[in-house]
Amino acid sequence: MPPPKIVEYADLDFSKPVHGIEEIRLINPQRLEMEQLTAIVTVDPENRTVVGYKDVGHDEFWVNGHMPDFPLMPGVVLCECAAQLGGYYARKYETLGGDFIGFGGMNNVRFRRPVYPGDRLVLLVKLTRLRKGRRAEFQFQGWVNDQLVFNGEMIGVPITQAPETDDSDDA
Image (tube, rainbow, N blue to C red; front, top):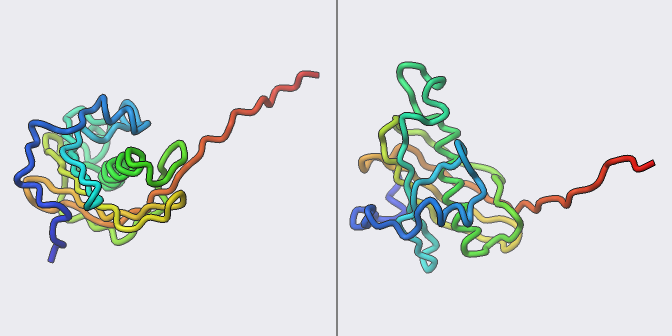
């Protein structure tokens, strides 16, 4: 039996997201083919939840090569979508620090139904545990047409960009 929804999203207005792609770009570093969010519909810091979505296009980088003539969204890309939404929450609400949020791990991930180009993937993420400055643990779910397509748990960790060093030989 699938788990209950992290957030009951049926009454949310998806036509009026609270953050669009430009606002997401102010927080998340991913660009071009690695941008995996379309919009953020709601953020609830009190309940530590965030709802967003990805409109899956017919021109995604994986469409031609992942099951040619029958494109399925790769599981790793589904996980990246959830990670970007969790990372957005962690960066926006400064729960971890660091320059970036990286994957620390994933547990109990289940893929339940395929996701295809043309689908709207609704993403639900909840912060379940925080070790400030060290790691954030999240539950996540992805839904298409009110059917659960994947879910699991993930860990986000802060990543600090190493300062550039001059390796040139001046001698």
